Length: 80
Image (cartoon, rainbow, N blue to C red; front, side, top):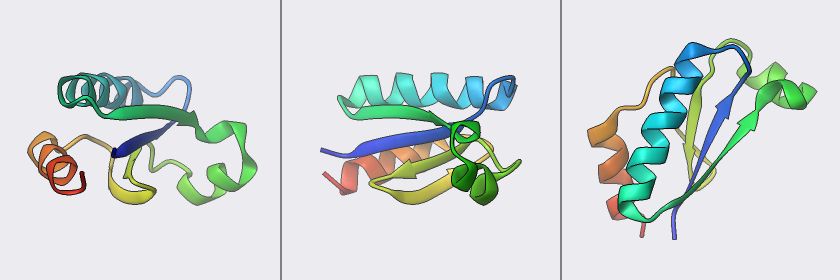
């Protein structure tokens, strides 16, 4: 099954929106997802900086700053 990860940080309104979108989409498709705070790890903070939220599908970067719903749904449908 596909796994979606949202790299996020506290106080980021775009991150809240992205997490809600991913939760809704993954819930509808029955896909497991999770969120990781980039500020909890210096390496993640260095890699992603202010580019959060970043969405990964199966550990590959899918997009950042916002969820492209049609594109995410298409990718989740093809990687199953």
